Amino acid sequence: MTALNRVPSLLSRAGTASALTLAVAGAGLMVPGAASEASAATASAKALQIAASKKGAPYKWGATGPHRFDCSGLTLYSFKRAGKSLPRTAAQQYNKTRHVSASTRKQGDLVFFHSGRSVYHVGIYAGKGRIWHSPKTGDVVRLQKIWTKSVWYGRVR
Image 1: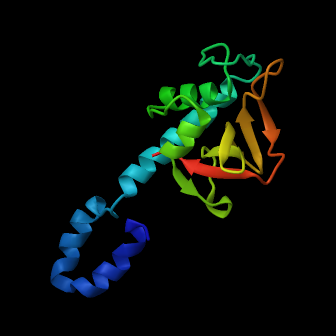
Image 2 (image 1 turned 90 degrees about the vertical axis):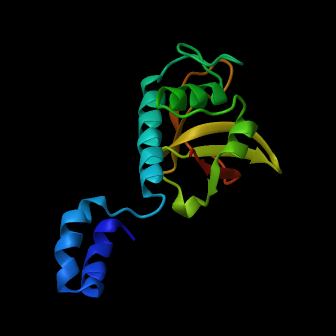
């Protein structure tokens, strides 16, 4: 529940004398964790834009930008520019994120491709079942439809 949605409920419980106090202080009402979630959402949106701005940059194994990338290098670079730090490899990045379900995924979440329990690829969720990623040698950073159901989602904190 957002702070805005909580105001009518708080007012009804506060009584007339406290209503003015709540109205004056209302701008300061916060739901625990809302500020950090908003900050993470902003960073994720920025990281998504940064990844998209690298469209056409060539894949190079081990590269972390700014002109060439491997898959985790692109996510590392994009989030670093957005003010968030990530470890280097896709598997390490998976372990650092807050895991979310496919039904709650959002634009800017990381999409981890796995075989069994091993993560082998990562991209940034762009919405509508698509990711920005740096696929493989001979390819370039591009927007692509997710091609398998063997994916997990992670939200950068």
